[in-house]
Amino acid sequence: MLKNQVDFKKKGTVFNIQRFSVNDGPGIRTIVFLKGCPLSCSWCSNPESQNRNKELLFNVKNCTACHKCETMCKMDAINFNLDNRIDKDKCVNCGECVESCYPGALVISGEEMSVKEILDELNKDSVQFRHSNGGVTLSGGEPLLQEEFALELLKGCKTMGFHTTIETTGYINRKIVEEIVPWVDLVLLDIKTMDEEKHLKYIGASNKRILENAKRISDLGINTIVRVPVIPEFNCDKESIYNIAEFTKALGNVKEIHLLPYHKFGLNKYECLGRKYNVNDNIKTPSEDVMLELKKIVEDIGLKCNVGSH
Image (cartoon, rainbow, N blue to C red):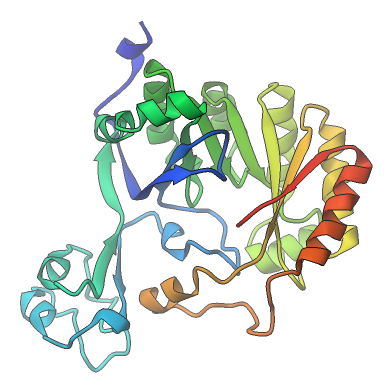
């Protein structure tokens, strides 16, 4: 029995479990967000996902300056003379200050959870999965960066009869693809640009591994949708989208592209992390007309195209 092959005690670091999603696979879905990402996209809307370890966030708008956190911190890492209050060199992310912060100005991003603990949470949504033909989506970050945990969690989902989806950057080694993808019903694969120089500049890594894995996933016959975050001054132009669509068409087994317009919904998270948001303030969300023009390019190549939210 498959159930006997699952390591229910395997643990991973999760930073969110989001219910009632309708944009990350078929039906109504629950998304499990895993921490850690090998890429550093300038526009990332989940910056708290990039670091594999737990992180302490501070939201100044919620702070009442009661100083209870300062009293609780045994590492002397709370410093009210700092804009972000947290001395990163001293903080060990123990979370004791969070317990004393009743207004919620301090929050820990990242919780170690076992496969069983997550499956118990997912089981609460089984009825809505069944009635909507939905299921579970693993996202991040890059969920396959925690490959052993992701594998056991996907196997566990299959013991419960859940439809499984992964959102992946594709920046992983081939062995992980071959080991994990067979446990997945749908792959949502990010392809951001075919231009390696741009990929290196804005994302911090070559796109060669991603494109190779796109071919490998297609060859394995797994249902795949390519997703493209559409970013002005990066890939929000006809040539960039045409090149991605041509590559996708050539894969053979991929029939659909989702174009996801840029937004700034994650901007406040950078402030909470004490990090700079490295996107020009003048960059705006692409207009509906622009997105429809790009959609037509994809459709003219012979692929289905959806304009969604990113």
